[in-house]
Length: 129
Image (cartoon, rainbow, N blue to C red; front, side):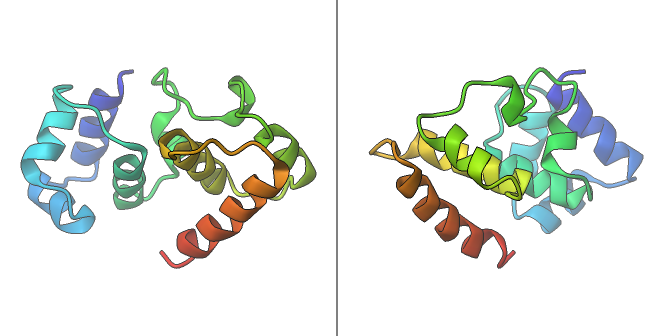
């Protein structure tokens, strides 16, 4: 199932309107509608908001869409694989954030120490939600 179809199906299954989802997520009605119609793509941050609105993990939202963010199925950036191997207790949401943050960073994280520093910064932010 495509992500846009899955999002619309979830919203309708919960008997929610676009306006209700907008109120809960802070996203505009037109933006949510464009995502559901496949006119635009959602960022990972947007997907986190939508998943929280529908009370499901982001990984479940992406499951079976061809966009599964499970770290086991892709090559991880340099140093991150070793960092995760040394820290198996890391939450999947934090792993997703680490990868997302690295892909948008001006400088690439290379060492385990770089990843550890980013991990603790993101964990502080993530746990405040």
